[in-house]
Image 1 (spheres, rainbow, N blue to C red):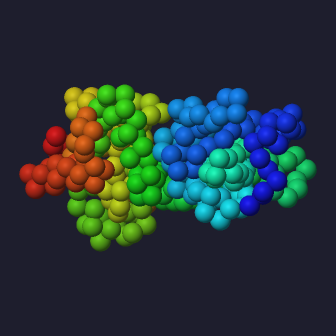
Image 2: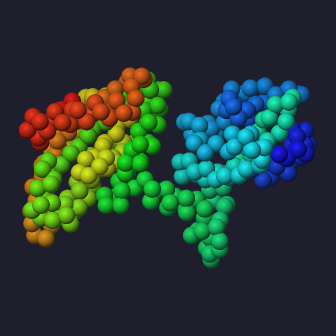
Amino acid sequence: MDKDITIDFIENNLNIFQKLYDVIRVVDPITKRVLLYNGNTLIEKGSSCFNKIGKEAICENCISIRALKDKKTYMKIESVDNKSYLITVLPIEVDNKTLIVELIKDATDSLFYGHSLDGKGCKVSNIINDLKLMTIRDSLTDIGNRRFIDETLPIDMKVCFKKDEPISIIMVDVDYFKSINDRFGHTTGDFVLKELAGCLKQCIRNKKDWIGRYGGEEFLVCIPGADEKAALVIAERMHERIAKKKFIYNNEDIKITASFGICSTSNKEITVEEFLNLADKKLYEAKNAGRNRIVF
């Protein structure tokens, strides 16, 4: 632990720190609350430590807890909403209690790795974004993959419930996809999935909506803020567009249809798994009823 680092030292040398960092604060690593230094007393400011960098929940790799546990100074880069933050944490003792001094710098345009002539190619923010895209993008369809769905859907649900807004999801499944692979080959099947993903993307409303590949030939459409009626309009638009689209590969005109299952909720008690299962059940109702239809 950095025994020489006290709150008085930081306060007396604030000028130096302010030139290096955008935010300097004291945090209780257990409650995750930011503390305000008022005279000789530290009192809770009320805001959570993760709010400052635009996160909705506690960081999975919370280095303040690690600093508390190991009694050591740590640093990390946190990427949120296309911004990269350099965060340094230092444990200090105040009234026989270990607190954390957090120093935060928006390093999106100022942190580099290695050297290049223009500097753009080695920005750490660019490297992080490239790595992030590799982990959350489906390489075939260029939409979110299952990991993207698992990470994004819970956040969107929390945000909607916090605003007292509904949220809707649509499960989309290509009908008889195995027969396409069997008849035309897997390369053609891949082409169909890629074209279908592009077709679905053209039907969503705005940047808040998103599409992910749930698995195989199954896709998930998420529409934050939309009730069942709005979700049905989007599903019908997708259904119509698929019916009109020509999937032509190697001079073969491939006709496809899709089944849709819609689930909407504003129930704050519902879990992600329950939400997905309800939409999945509607999808299978559509398939069992003869496919090429929407059930909600």
